Length: 415
Ligand SMILES: N=CN[C@@H](CCC(=O)O)C(=O)O
Ligand SMILES: [Zn+2]
Image (cartoon, rainbow, N blue to C red; front, side):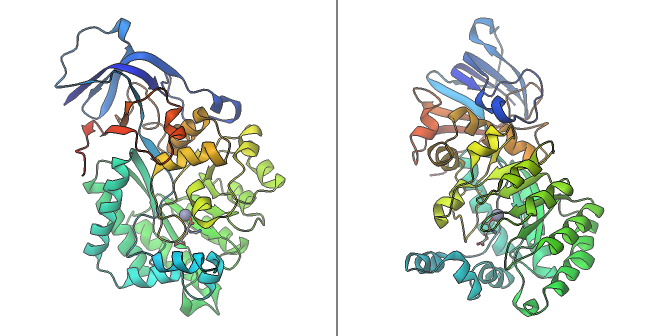
């Protein structure tokens, strides 16, 4: 299958060389080509350039993109889209005055989702998750990370990971898998959290590694969840078993989790709503990607990650959705990009870099995804006719995407 997209008003994120991360001041630059063409063969970008240099090419499918912008599909590096049911009642409880933390203390929150998931069949869990995955792909996401963490028993965590494996097999999206058994302390371990950490370290991680079901290991490092010592043990055990660390950190409290994750050479540190100067210092000179999740801040009415401080310190930043039933029931990367500009004061160029190439880096995928580069996978968004790429974040809540191509296949529009 070959696709020619011609007369592109502006082609974004064009990288002649295979750039895999964009940091600090460089995030302000989004390289583009005006009046361009792009050629896809099978699942790969094979050529692009200005229309003035276009020579006749026989493609099976020709798309005229006059007036339209073309860019790499979004790379969403932090989601929990495999879950069962929803938590809309807790949403109403919060409107009526309870906080996210109070709901969790009463046994709601993650434990609520875990109970529902444990009682949901693997087939049903797959079907519910597939609907979410297809929906976010329609919204322009072509590469995505998916976490476990609503199982919290060996059996239920394995069930989640098998569902992710099946999604990976059946879907065109590039999918990376994260073991997040340390998402909450199950009720039966409330009085003995260390025993649950022991279970994660000595049973869950080895079993998951043996079945080759996870690329990353993750911990919710937070007061009332897992402390620095627990986090240290779990990230170390994951590393020994070939899983790269990631971490949920500084969502409500900052107490050293960022530096610890950097010590473990984490691929990313995610949330960062509460950042101290020493957390920013810890990230300098590391290979760890800070990840902001603005939809979570929006939904929970908690502070937004200080993107300006992070980027102005010369660091990179990625943007992701955090799609989950409790803190972010939305997987819309377009809303994330808008909110990053509106609330985190990121420029459109910074936000698009953060949601494409840096998102791919946070998943260890930026060699293949996240930019328009010959040889990279053909994950592409074609917008409707718009005045400029600034309109993508500006027209928040609007859907300006006309066509999504994932691994060289044009997605059929869902109605
Ligand atoms: N903060 C921890 N985990 C999720 C929320 C999980 C939930 O509430 O179900 C997050 O990233 O926001
Ligand atoms: Zn999360």
